[in-house]
Length: 96
Image 1 (tube, rainbow, N blue to C red):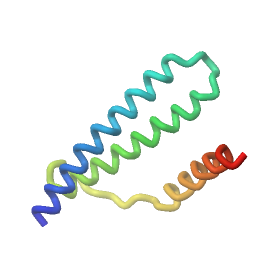
Image 2 (cartoon, rainbow, N blue to C red):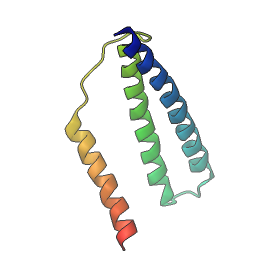
Image 3 (cartoon, helix red, strand yellow):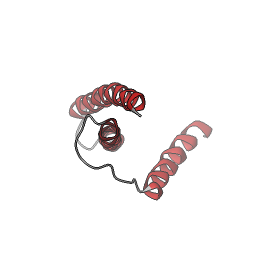
Image 4 (cartoon, rainbow, N blue to C red):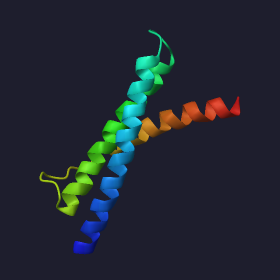
């Protein structure tokens, strides 16, 4: 179990760095947008997903024993419905 915790901690740390970069770049891009731009909605979605990803990182770190707290179950129906909407928008833009 100790090796698995070390692995989970390493993955969580690297993933957290990627999420932090995505969050920062989306905030920078949003700041450069003109008011009322359609891209603002997509950038907001990126930020929301990055924040949810950071919660997954937190749970990995709890599992690894490097973070205090209690791991919680994720509502998979919400995650699946979000992914369906994301895939619908992506498929429509590439098929048309």
